[in-house]
Image (cartoon, rainbow, N blue to C red; front, top):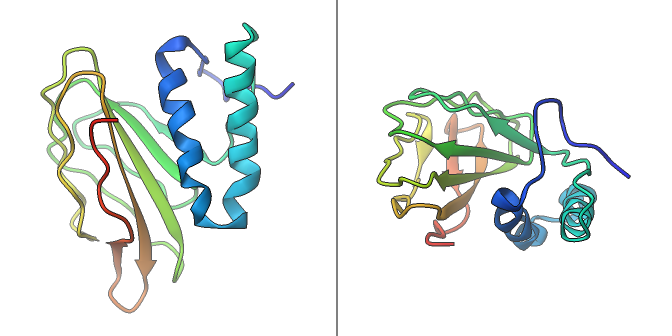
Amino acid sequence: MPTLPPGESLTSGNLALLKFVPDFRNWGEGMNANLDAIDAAVTALEEGEPSGTISGINTIAFTTGPALSASCAVNMITLTASVTSSTWPAGSDGQEVGIIILQDSVGGHTWTWPTNVRGGGTIDTTAETLSTQKFVYVVALDKWVTSSVMQVGI
């Protein structure tokens, strides 16, 4: 049975998020191993066994100026206040990375995209909803460019 990263716990509070992530399967075979681990974690939670490896997801501790990672499949953050700035280092040409932004139980928080992002959508500010979008890195532009429409209200 896989295990969660240090400091992370699999709870019913993030079950909805975990169930959503498998919708990223159209990213290609590189994501399938990570998504299989996520599926196993969701199954373990549903069966009352809160353990499972969730590799490929970078869970970002909240700050008003978070740093996204280019070394993961998905960046995930729960907003407890508005993000006024954020950063995202360069990736490799054609690299795809997604972001999942979750509103806390209060909601109303906004998100400011990094300056090297083009096409980032507007997140849903409703309490306890998810907003997600995926991006591809384009070396010629030195930018993360949207490769999907922002999905909100999840």
